[in-house]
Image (cartoon, rainbow, N blue to C red; front, side, top):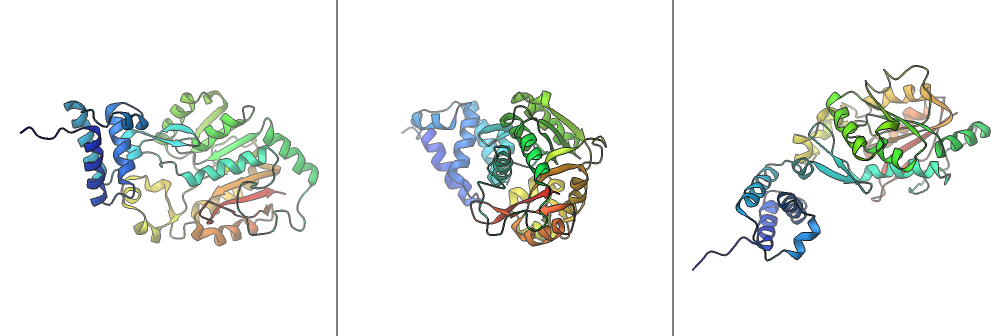
Length: 320
């Protein structure tokens, strides 16, 4: 009696069970993404080929991917890409894997560009950003027009380039400066910019925060997803994050606010009057970061925007 063939359906079922036993939070999805990659097809195509039997070479490739996933390697690194804001981005172990939470930064920036107010799509529990002495309204109107038109935008710590590229795609008249301290990360970001047809409108600069950006360059919008994990939180991270993603892009220092402490004053120096600063944060440092921004007299602090889990996620401030 011949052995049961390793059809697509059988491979998926066995692999999902195997990855679940090795700690995967999404074993079926992992199995489908890896098998589709090994077969060179779209994931949805697997559902029309359940009874087909992949060839020996395809099964060997798939088996190696599954082994590495069971050892903790993130799926995005294994297949070399991840979708973010409906675009597919190349990712390597030199860059963080894009998270859905970071899409809130893009949404918030685009809300500003469309004139829908401060964080129009986010949840907020606090009063508006202005407050007493909320700044010059003419400067505010001027900055709003620039953000919606030929805005000058900086993406600080660009990584794979997701923020810079998404904003360039959706704001076709803007000019973007994207910085990162990692040359390898910038190489990935440049490839992604080429792929999405926005490389001519993004200048990539290798530097710490804004240190090597020309001194006379001013911005209407600065966005950043900086390292914000505290050292004490590292052991609480998922294994695939803790052991495989670049530590320098994750961990800020003992408090988790060290990078932001340096970014806030630099942003205040580089923003035009009425310009905006948007930063992704960890919910654990919301209060500390709000205090940092509020203590800089050049900023009016806005409400922290919450993500879909209603956790504080995006800090926003306006240059007076």
